[in-house]
Length: 147
Image (cartoon, rainbow, N blue to C red; front, side, top):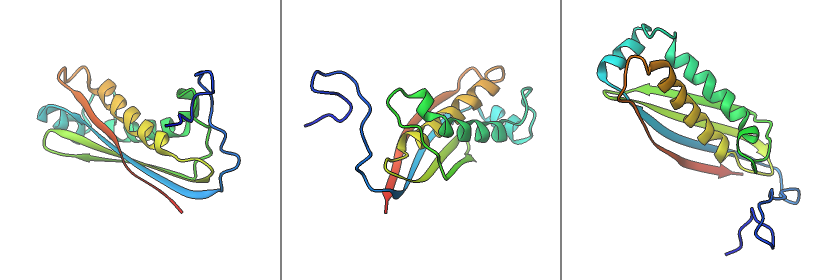
């Protein structure tokens, strides 16, 4: 198996995608943060002391996707055409879905994953005074497509 991110001497390198065709690419990632029901009620009623948790987390996730190339050393910096962060409140958690799209020579999996991770971290940060039991989990790639 040939590793694409290491050279012949085993040193890390950025993958050269210049010969790849430009294609429409989309990636969807998902994760969740488990919270106490009382914390979820505070979020729903916008009574968390730090402000509007859901809108702040959504914006943080979008910003993270846009800056993924600065956060992860070998990621290509990308000019994304679309990023969406969807937050669904459940009985004991918030499910986070991040979608990233681009017409480019490389995929956007890391951008979708970054959106989910940073949205979850933002929720954690904003709610940590109210809930000491939060758990971020199951951040994963759900799908990736290119055409």
